[in-house]
Length: 116
Image 1 (cartoon, one colour):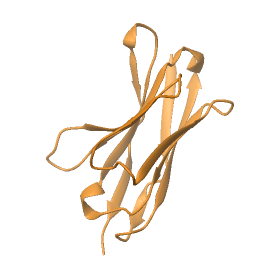
Image 2: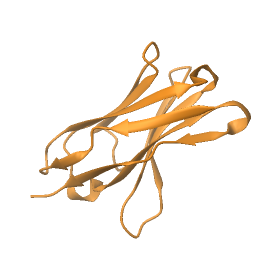
Image 3: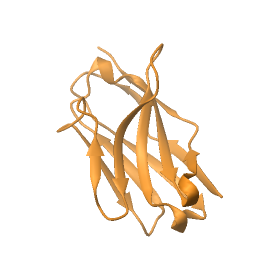
């Protein structure tokens, strides 16, 4: 069993930056993929970035060059550094971890609002 808690969301102006944190507890050693998703109003949840334990990373085209996913293995945390934020980045952001048998674990979500 894995529990995930996001933090770091908030209100930021276009061009600003935020760093989201996902704090994991429980059987975190079983996780082989860590990710961030987001869901904007009236849109489906989409994958933003993922990090595999072998170091491979993937990003949505819309965030490439602006967002960076990273992991602190010792602290059982992973992060999403978001730079040059734009209004279209406004969404609820969810951290995700995938463990044995491809079981997904989700955080509760944290709101990111980008507005002038």
